[in-house]
Length: 248
Image 1 (spheres, rainbow, N blue to C red):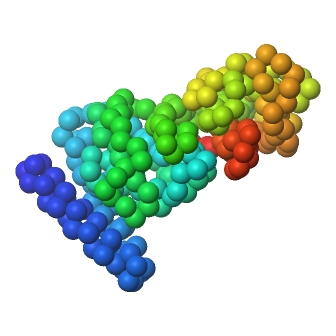
Image 2 (cartoon, rainbow, N blue to C red; image 1 turned 120 degrees about the vertical axis):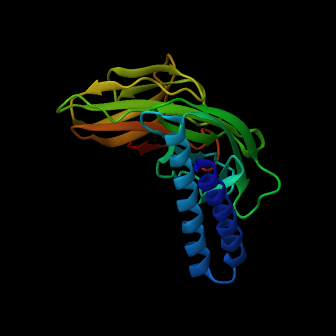
């Protein structure tokens, strides 16, 4: 019975995807209607596969567009479109996925013949991930960081992710004060640090030095909240280096 339902859902998802693409430039309302139907079928299919495998709890995965010169993109998982039109600095909601290996293909928005990135990834059971498309579009990479919602009562926690492709390894420090994260190279996500809630001025320094590459003023860290500070953009170009903040 499972296989019949899964096959039916897969066919429906493919049909809705075709209809969504057909109406994309003809009737935007019908385009969004069929795209939502496609997405719902894909979610049901993933949930059915998890139940069939008898797993305890979903993994959750979201996608961040961190490539400074890549266009808006569509994301396909195992040949099925799951996300559409994600632009630079945008990130998706978490998608519920069973553990396993997945083929990820990323295409310029509206295209499906020549991916800008094609990569096999492994999703572990019960984890939360942010998968970032990072680096220049000619050398695009899919990088993953493990997220966590749990915070000690009354505290905040923060980690840092270096996704600026032309920036050197960096330190993250309180302005004029202590270093929170040391010698973080491109692509690396640090562990979380637990801190008291505060509003602070931070700065990004060239690792091991006092040279400030980026000032980050008025960073508010609220109680019972988890944050990921992500360095995006270019240290020596446009779009400029900046920090964005993700919350689970």
